[in-house]
Image (tube, rainbow, N blue to C red):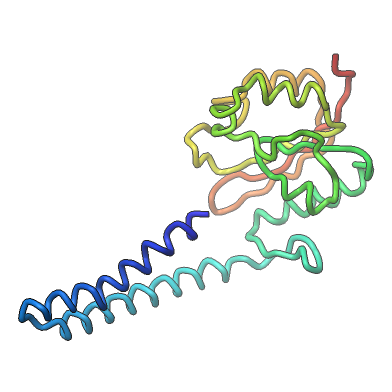
Length: 204
């Protein structure tokens, strides 16, 4: 939602540069028209630069994920996601559940499989807001038949769940689930893949 928050600030800045500040300059006997034209040129250059950067980014999204109205485009990380989705559809029954750790509820949506827990993500902010015990308790009370472990960029600092946070949660997962399949991949940002785990023992 960052773009939504940035848009009002950008609009205010543009109005200030092209209307408010030139008017203030004119009221003080200055040349507001010149400032307005220079500001418009700068704003136009920034817009063109943004469009170019956005075009370069979108041109790298060439691999489709999902079909029909669910179809979206991704970079090379979409390949392991597609492999994981295909395996999930084949292996996970319609009435069975799987939870994605630490993040990736879109897999549930695309596969049309429920997670059975009230938390869509298990990232550091959730561990801070709700506490690890509450997050882990949700898994204990409604243990899914499968768990998908997804690599993701460490934007919050920690390297990953079970490494720098969520130690008890991953210990519980390791004790009750075993790996079925792994779909590793490599992207420009580093390693990326999906590991699907199946529940091997009953959860007390």
